[in-house]
Length: 43
Image (cartoon, rainbow, N blue to C red; front, side, top):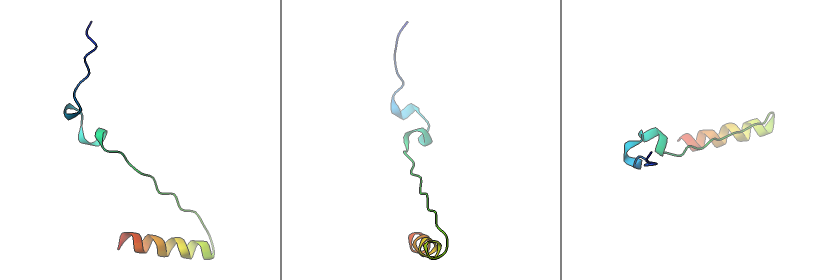
């Protein structure tokens, strides 16, 4: 049996792209800071 791997170009594009996870938690004033951070991040 051959152990031949497929070239990266043969893989789906979503399998090649890394992803990042952003986790924000907070209540009260921390929630306000989080909301403003997300507002600036998406603007």
